Length: 385
Image (cartoon, rainbow, N blue to C red; front, side):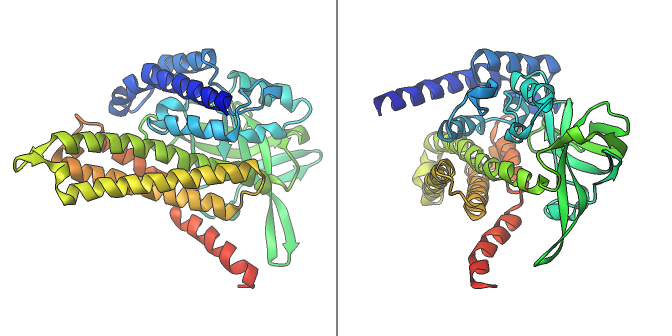
């Protein structure tokens, strides 16, 4: 137990020192300019490798840090205190790449772990956001090859990728619930004829964190570019999305903690009517509710991590984390603006940036509405409803 505590303290001190030196000093500049200078991004990437943080989520057998889910939850919580535009340069390759086999291992998996290549997770489409099964991107056989057509948008990442994990319809299966699209994941290299990738819309949340638009026009792919098995792409995506949503919740807790710290300091030092505003119930009770919400969210994340490590994490568990933590963060951020008053919306203070950044958490990786649908389904389906 003593050893575990020591390792946890060492890990947290390493991450916090890295954030203080490499991330926090650049937040205002990135938010103001809306971009991360390439040389700064590469500097963060290089120093993350030196600190042993790059690919910390990947198993040791492929050259990663081999950290446990519990350890990764601690790291992601610290990362969440800042902006994705910067901490995303501390690479955490998608675990989906562990499904690589044969030549894919040296072409995609290992370069991603070493930081030589960057990937995009390309699932969302213009007409299929929350409704992933409504995707229209498709691939049909042409001899041994596949011909891919379609488009993706809101595909996020820190910089132009080297390849994308693209999900497309490759057929239809008949099930007890009716026809169901068969989804397959493909590994598609940037530069492949017919594959166009460019920067897309700019968000007011996490300015500098890029979104990309991907278009596929008769892109020819070999059979060795299927990731996993044909028709098993949606299951593969689900494996990543599950823990991805837990990590979103973890990041929300970190950001909430930072906001609460700023709001508490302001409430203790800002005086009105001859006393600190925190002594007024209208303000003090907001701080109390913030603390309750964060404690609850942290416990929910911790429970999900234990369930994941024991192999009993369900879709409903994941959705509860995602919806509660993201909505907790939004309440905290909004109340913090109220506590700061007019100054909370001024560019000179970080509250307005943290408030803007917080809003996206209720949308990406599955909206709150979708999460509630998943939870409702888990309650009613056992009853046949």
